Every structure is written in structure tokens, then in C-alpha cells.
Amino acid sequence: MSDKDNCTYKEGPLPSCAPLAVPMLAAQQHSEPAYESVDALTKGTLFPGLDLPFMDYVAKGPVEASPLTELMALDFVCQELALYLDTHPNDAEAFKKWKSFTALAKEGRRRYNEMCGPVQRGDTAMFDGWVWPEDPWLWNGRKAGKK
Amino acid sequence: MFVYEKKLQYPVNIKTPNPAMAKYIISQYGGPDGELSASLRYLSQRYSMPYPELKAVLTDIGVEELGHLEMVGTIVHQLTRNMTVEQLEKQGFQDYFVDHTAGVYAQAASGFPYSAATFQVKGDVIADLAEDMGAEQKARVTYDNILRMCDDPDVIDVIRFLREREVVHFQRFGDASGAG
Image 1 (cartoon, each protein chain N blue to C red):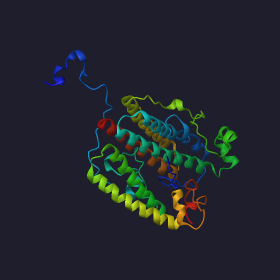
Image 2: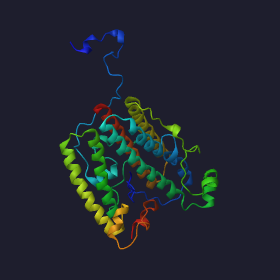
Image 3: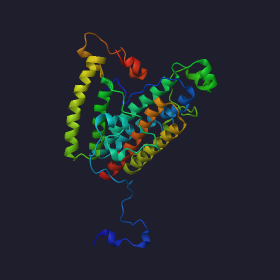
Image 4: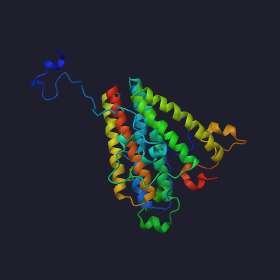
């Protein structure tokens, strides 16, 4: 006989054998289906099941294509898969996909470095001088982002 | 240890100054349910978390929230950087301007300076995770409210992205509480 069978009305609608408290939420089961990377960045999630906009506030179109947004999209997929893997560490498919996107993001960063400058301070080592302080600092917006 | 990436998580390109809008959006910088609270909450709760999955999810979401703090700061900066004295007077921005000019200061929409009283670190798995899920929903509603008031498509696009991240983080904390 399991503990559950011992629960009676005396414990009320929540039986005494229930855990102290668990913030319940329907768990995400799979890392698929998934949006393609630029779509994912545009929507703010990789997963169609979590794409829950406020009223009709949806993106007017994909983010404008540039070396920067290409890198943003690849990094975004890595981030989404990493958060998913933190809570689903045994999903081998998701891990495989994360590995391939991590490699793509590394290439994307190299391309961005060549066209626009360092992303991480260490990237400055591939330049002839200390260009780290130079624009683009992205809070200035698009104009500064183009060299 | 943290390594800075000289880019935003999502592009922010706002063309039109609008100090009135900056004045309420700044609440997601230093207000009660803002991104600074979010990052400090998650990064501080990590120390007493007993399970590896929870340490990882708090670290990774906490760091992403720092990226969102930077994005909200960018929105406020771009909404105020080229404003005229006429605009700031007409839009009721004088009280902010007199103290901070066009700088970005951590405060709520009401003007109340950032306070760590906006979040809790209870040192208990269930209490902290339940707070985290509530915090994501509160931040989501704040973005809903900003969308209700906002009429600049450049701003709406970024707020919409930030709001969606709250939905995803809520799911992750929910998944984490089931896993733990």
C-alpha cells in the first residue's frame, strides 16, 4: 500500500503525503520543434511552444541581416539550448544541436571580428593595435555598428 | 568571473527621442521588477542552492539578465540622447533631468532609487524558486504594461523581445523545480 492510500479527508484536499510544496508547471518535454536561428532571435525564443506574445505584438519581420545580427542569432540559439539543457541535461539530441551551434557561433564571431572588431577583449589579439576602446559600443545603435 | 561581450543580445536602434517614454521604461532598469533585481536575485541565490541543475540555471539566467539590464539601459539612453530642452520640458522630464541630465540611473518609474528590498534571498530551495517564478511573471506584466503605453515601433520591438524572455525563463524555473 502506498502512502497515498493513507491520505484521508482529514488532511484536506492536499494530502499529508504531498511534498511540502512544489511550484508546478507543465514541463517542456522536447527541444523540438524549434525555429531556425534568425526566426528564434526575432521571436525571442527557440521554441514555438513558448512563443506566447502579448495580444498581437508580434515581430513585423526578421531582424535586419548583418554580420552582427547573424552572430546574435547563433549566440541566441546557443543560449536557448543551454538554458534548456540546464534543466534537461540528459537530452542527447539537444546537446548535439548545442555543440553544432556553438561551433557555428565561433565561426560567426570570427567573421564579425574581421568586419567590425573584437567581441570579447581577448579578440583584440588578432588586431595590430589596442582597438578594444574603439566603436562599435552597441548602445550607440546601428550607425556606430557599421565601419 | 565574467567576460564582457561587446554586443547586445538583441539589436536596439531607436531613432526618435522620447523622454516621457524613457521615464517609465527605466523602471525595468532599477525598478521593483526590473532587470537589475532579476540578475542580483538569481546570482545571489546560487550560493545556497543544493542541486547542480539549479546552480546552472540561476547562473545562466542571472547572466542573461545582466544582458537585459544593458538592453534596457540602451533603450533609455537612445530615447534621451538627442532630446531638446523643449522636449524634456513638454514631456515632464525635468525632475529626472535636474539630477541625472541624460545619464542612465537605476531607479523606478516613480523616481525611487534602486533598492535591494525589491528581491529576496531566502536560502531555501522551494522559497527561492517560487520567488523566481513569480519574479518572471511580474517582469512579464511590467513589459505588458509598457507595450500598452508605447507607440514607437523601434521600442515596441525590443520590449516584445525582452517580454518573451520572461516567458522562457518562467518555464525554465518551472522545469528546474520539477527536476530538483
